[in-house]
Image 1 (cartoon, rainbow, N blue to C red):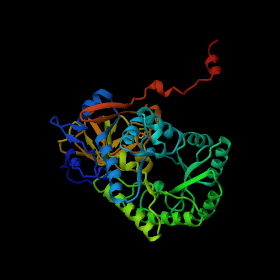
Image 2 (image 1 turned 90 degrees about the horizontal axis):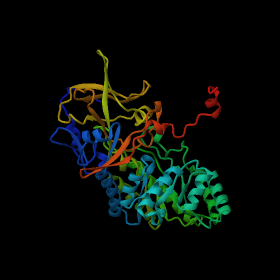
Image 3 (image 1 turned 180 degrees about the vertical axis):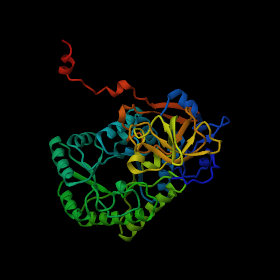
Image 4 (image 1 turned 30 degrees about the horizontal axis):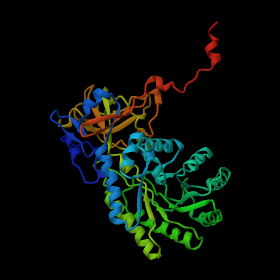
Length: 471
């Protein structure tokens, strides 16, 4: 939250760019044009709003591709063995995002049949589905039988989370005549990190993965099931992490279990998946490591642990989500009503809120904002940006410093690519926003704005109620 300091800055203060996308507040292509407007991907945000309306998700293709390349190329630089970066698509799963990421050679981490279907559809439309199946990893702590059957029919890799899933896979595989099921085992490494309690997944008190005290029994069981082709081990310690030490520790933990799986249980472990979790910069005070620094930490940790344990280097897999997509997107809103409470607070309302960005009300997440049509204008007031929903907690940003806002101004919230569209809802029966992807002055619609008719697409009125007043 910004303090009540003298208001001297303008929206230009957020334009300073670092080399690593996750260390920026605005997309890499952001600039202020001659009209004093915010431009992203060579497109004037006010022009985009005039064409597509608000709220509007605006994705900068340059920023997304840069993040993909930095992950991919950094692993090639720092890790001596084979590596594969896969996108944690829960951050934002749609055809266009999947398509851009696939075109950069990355794979996919999916956590539902819907994410898997979206990913496959994108790959099929690009004509690269068949050669990409070995880069799809299916996660989830409670996969249904139908989801597991879907995964088995496709042949993607399944990251097994619990005993029920292990036993179900053996039965389903046998019933379906599958000769070999490629799996990785997810374990809870018992590593704490400083992040929101809801997004810590590596500590022992977590719903995800096998506990360390279960692993010997799990490895024994897997070694006795010929149908299970155990390729590797997986762990994930959380999200929005700035510390490097937890990820350094994780490499050692996974390699120790790899050694035991190979030497004691005769399993052919060839892959280690260290998850993701690298944080991004949401506010000026945030100081995450760069993508390159994170990759270097993980790579050296795994290589060092392999050397100590006299093991060949496994295929090293990482699955970033937020740090790939978050900074690449902003959300544009139209300013509406104002409420001034003397000596307390001024509220500025916009035409969206918790239905298109539930993170502030869910995680108490903090964002930064600019007025896209007043980028060079000095900030003149401290306000609270409120959403339009019938909910007192529908507050996007508290104590935002902005130029004097008028109805019709275009307010832009930064770094909304991760867990905004993917967690969006129709609360208060609001249609979900449109999204465009921008590059070199061209904008392409990637998600149509929902309509009121879309809200009723799955609705049904029972026939008896239709007939009740028809005489």
